[in-house]
Length: 262
Image (cartoon, rainbow, N blue to C red):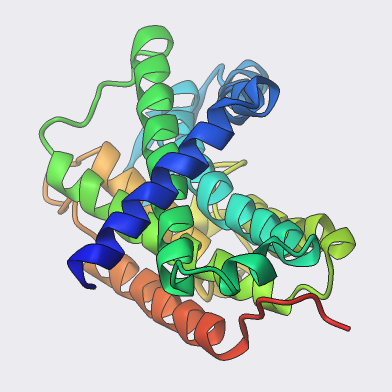
């Protein structure tokens, strides 16, 4: 990317960030939503421990901290990009951007960079909240693995957010399509309900492992709760997420539309 184009990307990031914070209601609930889920789940299920198989037995209230961090990244990257880009396409914003001097890839790169920055801020807030109220220690000893998992996860779900926006027919269908493609996976991938994988029916466990959400949650748990004899890095999980990121990028490049579907 040329230096001039990089300046355009940074300018787009600043503009998107300014527009985001000028809508205080949206900004507030963006950051309150994951914390609300964290508190609700720990109140409902946080009284005991959960056996996560290879990850060991962990306090339920503690284990929800990295899992809600996973949810935060998916919300900021996949859900946000999938919906907002579709809304902008149907309202004609993308068409006007396409006809402006700013290159289309610079505009999309700016939106992705903004989504990643929001995801990082959300994760930091969730981790700090968990350390303050649930004794979930910050994973300083495994910080490289944690950051690598966070980076691969954010990249994966940003590209998938662009891909799904290309497949959504119109703005009215965006919430239904985006939620239908992610909510079931959050339930079967240990994000909303942590469980021992051995307790899951074999076919459902196999299905969950086909998609990146399960690999993201497994890699995040491994980097957050290091156990003796086990690496905090999960190369296979990162590889699978990387393959989904490449697939999402290919779909986005092939099918992304700047104008509303007629």
